[in-house]
Amino acid sequence: MYAFDLISPKSLDKALEALAEEEAQVLAGGQTLIPTLKARLAAPATLVSLRAIPELRGVSMQEGRLCIGAMTTHATVADEARSHFPALADLAANIGDPAVRNRGTIGGSLANNDPSACYPSAVLATGATVITTQRSIQADDFFLGMFATDLEEGELIRAVEFPIPIAAHYEKFWQPASRFALTGVFVARFDDAVRVAVTGASEEGVFRWTAAERVLSKQFTAAAVNELGRPDVDMISDLHGSAAYRASLTQVLTARAVARLQE
Amino acid sequence: MQTITMTVNGRGVTATVEGRTLLVEYLREHLHLTGTHVGCDTSQCGACTVHVDGLSVKSCTIFVGELDGAEVRTIEDIENADGSLSPLQKAFQDHHGLQCGYCTPGMIMSLSALLRDNPKPTEAQIRHHLEGNICRCTGYANIVKAALAASGQLDRADAG
Image (cartoon, rainbow over all chains, first blue to last red; front, side):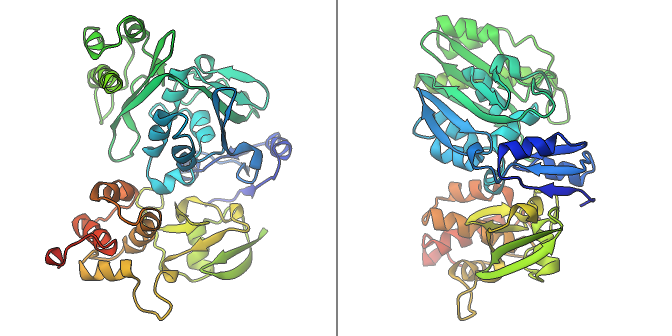
């Protein structure tokens, strides 16, 4: 490991102070950042760990919404969100592998906004709210493309608040080597609308498939999805799958998720 | 440099180290607990799996600076008090759950966490749990068999 300082402040105020310094970078679960440091793709002078700040951890219901602290691990979400929002618990239980789930955090995943990460699809499909140290950001405004979010320099995610859908399902097609989603679709059904968010597919990162949302809001069947054309989005093409394959997966996985919810 | 105090295999240890020191480096180079292996060093292979506060983690992807007060358990603490093999280790031996043995410490640490939380896992649960542990000898069939045997779920007729 090349030379840098690691500090673990015990309060959010101290963390923000430390992050205001030159070349300081925040460390959440580290399951992406530490391999990135080893590959010399990032070189901060100081890493500010959020691990010792208790207020950033925890899962609770607040006024009918599920509130998850930014530093809550995937394993804790898989466990503690299950009775409130089983589709989200299932998503968390299938990120990476058990050791990664014991360290990796929801806030880290959202701030990184990897185009193939699982969590962004759940946040976007439920219309969740990202609570930061400065403001509340609606999911529709938070994700700004591959590895890009609306977070400002020095702004940290404190928590995410999820409205609970009537029914929801995340259908993930695994990229088996990385265990990220080759493509994944989160379908969330609410009283007044259906929202469909797709990860692992678009060059622009996670996106809402609005054409599918429109037809599913009228007729919630897999057949309705299958009658649609494939999404008209600039798809990722790489050695794991062509753009056409990902477009096809988006449609197939959406139909599968809807079929699961019709059972 | 930071002064870090933790419990490693039941023993209190205090060291003044750079906070950026990786846990696996601390275990191997400072404490000479070389049973924990470095396979890929990129958090893919799971050879370096240890327990921190009872949870399995990849020690190549954790900084010691975050572990003040933590309880760490490594492969060296798995054997029985009298030095004989634990039931899980014995099952690996009986069912040829290792070939070169490089991945074995990580497999044992990962599976011991599973069996503690779920004493009778199904084969599918065992395989799902081992997704982060890679055996490059591809000895998975016997590793899964050893896990089934250690949880008392393998008929004697299937043994061997």
